[in-house]
Amino acid sequence: MNSNRNNLYDTFKDRRYGALFFGTFLVLMGLLALGLMMGVIIGRRDLPADLLQVLPGVGLLVVALVWRRVRQERARQRRERLQHGPLSRDELRVARSKLMKDQTQKKS
Image (cartoon, rainbow, N blue to C red):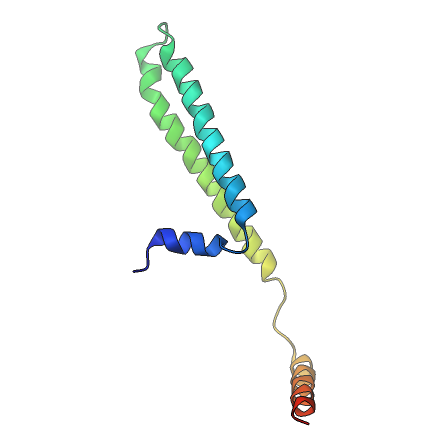
């Protein structure tokens, strides 16, 4: 059985435990801060009712903007990783000759 949760964890396994920890920590701290702010806002009695109806929409907008920024950053990192173009014919020829030379030396 191949679940999404296992796939997500496997990408971090053995390589990025620090990123996984700090990502989880920042999300939990953000949720805690959001909960505290919502408790303060809702606890006030002098707020207009319209403001309380708008708060969920504002929260969704903030989540969408954060998600968009994360996606943009990942796309930028992918583009930077793939900046090197393909090898020219001469570079390929030299690389193949080195590989063949190394293989013949190992057999001897």
